[in-house]
Image (cartoon, rainbow, N blue to C red):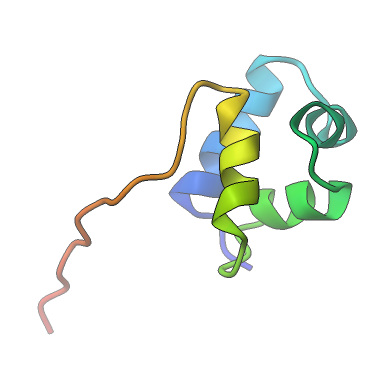
Length: 71
């Protein structure tokens, strides 16, 4: 799995708030496995669960313009 902007954001925020992955999973109401998958950049995750985690940091998912790669 690859690090993404989302995975990097969650990991940085978790560390900023001095939370372990276990703490984050308990406070957000998602499983520890989900937190690990999120921080590792798993490409397929449930949006509602991602928003549960992001909600702790005052954030949520939203549409973002995709950059075009010119080949």
